[in-house]
Image 1 (tube, rainbow, N blue to C red):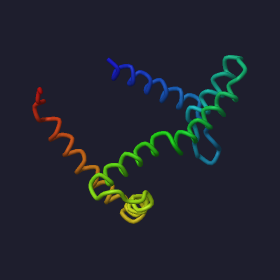
Image 2 (image 1 turned 90 degrees about the horizontal axis):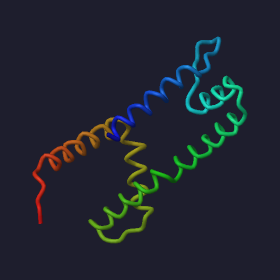
Image 3 (image 1 turned 120 degrees about the horizontal axis):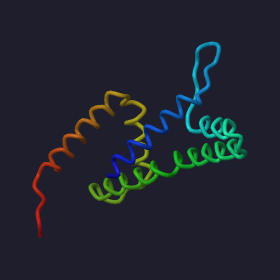
Length: 130
């Protein structure tokens, strides 16, 4: 059931994004939740759309800086420390940064494929009941 709710939310977000996007004379287009919030409030004659759009932008920036990425990096560092012993966090940081900067899309694509296969194999095993 949550999947259907997510599909509905995604469809609504995409539809509003297309309806309220900016199309410029040179052919470029810009849009997103900030534009649909601001323009949607203006279209309905309500105040506060710009403030909500700015607040959404600030929360997006804060979420990108610390929300998901910090949790993932911390968990990955914890796993590496469990394998090789306690190491300073900057070593794992350099390894991750080098993989992203120098590995490029091909390395990330390979990592994704390997991770996907591992998840499929693990998910296909019957669950053990203890």
